[in-house]
Image (cartoon, rainbow, N blue to C red; front, side, top):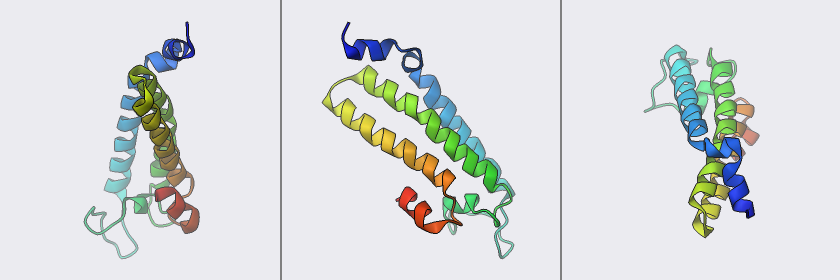
Length: 128
């Protein structure tokens, strides 16, 4: 049994799709909940047309910023086994490149939650 077969048989990797579904649902729920409760500094409601999504995590402005930020961190963590499992299931050079990009994206999602918009320099670096 080669190393790729061993990776494919690792239990979280065998069920990788469940991590992707759970992470996506978690992110959607946390964004929706924070979006519904958002009231900006001028008393305005959240609108995707005139707000950045990161404003939902702005501590001191968004009432449910902790929900949004915790959801991003948890969603980013849940995407890691999903990305690893997808790369192992597909195999090959392109899958390895996609896995690397997916891991960077998962880490960036989590870092946006760790460094919310009120901590702008690291938030900006994570959101780029």
